[in-house]
Every structure is written in C-alpha cells, then in structure tokens.
Image 1 (cartoon, rainbow, N blue to C red):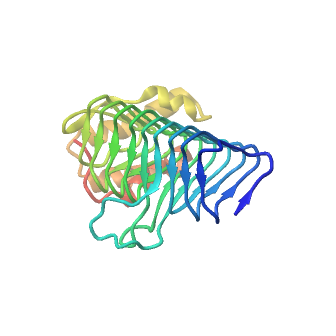
Image 2: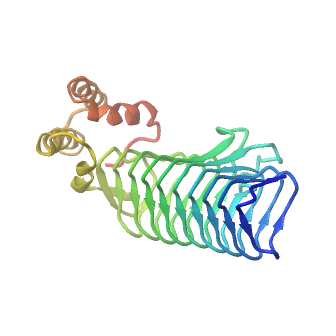
Image 3: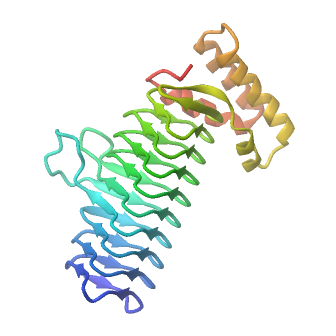
Length: 264
C-alpha cells in the first residue's frame, strides 16, 4: 500500500493493502477502497463511497457521496475476470453514481476521459467509452458498450441503449430514449429520440470561422435529414469535406464506427 503523507483519510474509512493514493487526496468518512485501486493527486472522495476492482482514477477528480466506482458489472457473462475502470483527470462525479468495470467480451475496460461532469444518480455501464468535456444530467443511464465522443451533452432522466454511439457535440434533450447512433452536432429529443436540429452553440468550441463551420455542418445535416441521399453518399461527402475542413473529421470517425444505424 502506497499512501502519500499529504493525503487526508477519515479514520473510519477502510483502505485495503495494495491501494495507491496520491498527494493531497482527501477521502471522507465511511468509504471502502479495495486492493488494486489507484487514486491520483488532489482527488476528493466524499463520504460513503466504494471504489473497488482494478480502478485507476487520475488527478483532481471529485466523487460525490454514496457513489460506487469499479463495481462488478451487470453482464451475465461476466465471471470475475480482471477487467478495469480507467478515469482521467478533473472529472466531477455527482452523488449516487455507479460506474461498472468492463467485460472480457467487450474492451475489458470502462474508460472515462477528462473534464467531464456527471450529475447525481448517473450510471455508466460496462465497457462504455466517454470522451472529454461530456455532461450527463441527473438520473441518466448508459447501458453497456455506449460511446460518447467529446463534448456530448445529455439531459436528465435519459436512457442510452447499449452499443449506441453519440458523436462529438451531440446534444440529447431531457427525458429522451436513444436507441440508435446520433451524428456529431445533432440535437435529438423524444422516445425514441429523433433529430430536431443542430447544436449550434457547440460550434463555438472549435477555433475556426464559426459562420463557415455552421454552413458546412448544416450542409451535412441537410443531407442526412432533408434529402433523399443514401447514407453512403453522405459519408462520401463528409470524407471529401473533411479534407478541406479538418474540423469535420469527427464525422468520419463517427461513420466509421456506426453500426446500429443513425437516428432519423
């Protein structure tokens, strides 16, 4: 067990041998952290948190009370294999969150990037991949194998079906159920969710000419949702445009991975 001398750990928390705790970490009362867990510098763990399995948490994360990180997943095929949860830096995870470890049938890990905000009662299922700058609202759940690209925004009380992919800057309205893939920059709403427009505010995140980018993304949106073009034709046009406008490479990455079909 390696615990930094500057870490502050409540006396009634249980820290098993084999845990690595970095400098400046603060662990509140009634926590249980089992062997194999690593917690990076400056992270704050509130009270009544359970962290177990092969879980690596980066620096400057905040984890709310009653959360469970690295728990055994809900895949019935899981037989106790040594799978992982990997969490990056500067994430804010609200209270009552559950983040499950991966499976051998999947990627063997659940991976979360940097600078994400998960509000209260968020569930991240096994083998999910969450990028950077993602926001997930209260009482929202991701089933297994879901992929959220950078800067996705999901409202409260949403459900994302297993194996769905949400492209960069996609936005999901409150109380929506997503059962197919959502292209980059697309706003979706309803159960089952359908496209309702573009997340134009998200375009401001990219350091390019905003008006020009809006026109390009709008063109692709119109091809997808206001034309009779086949999806393969839209993919070819996205690939062509991305050679001129590199900010559209996220469309290529999305179409390459999308297998469930996109929302219409």
